[in-house]
Image 1 (cartoon, rainbow, N blue to C red):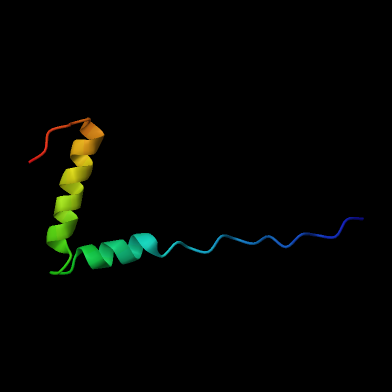
Image 2 (image 1 turned 90 degrees about the horizontal axis):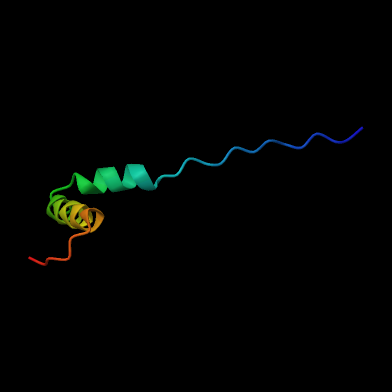
Length: 50
């Protein structure tokens, strides 16, 4: 009879919650907006700079 292996669940990743909380602060909101615009351009394959 083989010993039972303990099933370990991966701990919850705190990064998404931290990013959301930080992104909603007055210090980070403008930077988050800029990052989202940049990500959109990258995903669209644009090469034009503003």
